[in-house]
Length: 325
Image (cartoon, rainbow, N blue to C red; front, side, top):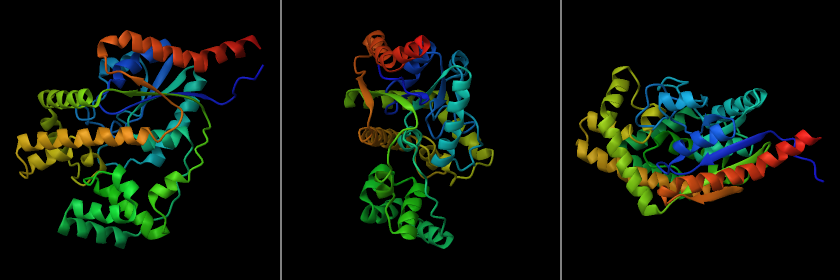
């Protein structure tokens, strides 16, 4: 009989925005004695609750959650910091006899943990960054994005034109190393230090887009405009990473008088649909994912049972095997 893996176990639930990860994650976490680690790059920021669709306080009390509300919105959170923090959390959670459970939709962040990415520090070129900032101010975000598309079309596909910081960083990496950021990602060995069980949620594209629009309408009713206004009034810089998040940059444009509220919401819905498409594209390049189509939302119980069976088949029989030794 083969010996059970000695690697730490790691459960992951991923999928595009609005696909229904939160409710399912809470039920799975209670079923398998998990602690949840947020795999969303923007939920780390305090005061950004509505636009990031954080689990409610009541939901967070049902199951321990990590990497939520750990930084002020002016802080430059990164994938490398996420990776380091999650590595430590996985060790701590296992030490408590629980199963670590990453739930989210930020592809690079999650994949960097699952496959132990090595983040190469190419340093910085402040003069180059300033030059690109000036170019963007003079010619617009789309023109800057076109520069990236010319040298690294794969990164340009992953990074939205409005995400100026990441566009400039990808250009900077190419400028400093002569190698594209996408080539560096492709060169990763993708060997996991964990025994992985990755569940991916997907659904009919039309239904997903409908859910996205309904979620945004709900966010507006819940007070997204006031949330963004309060962050700006508290001194959060408009150029901060947090203010480049979907739902925030569009409302900032409205508050600055550059868009009507109706136009800002229309733009937000369009950009979120495009973001969901990019998320799915990223995830489909990942390996080891057990995909579950959750288009028929009325079949939640059946979906839960099928996913539970996948997790049990991956982990539980091996736990039982270890106990028999």
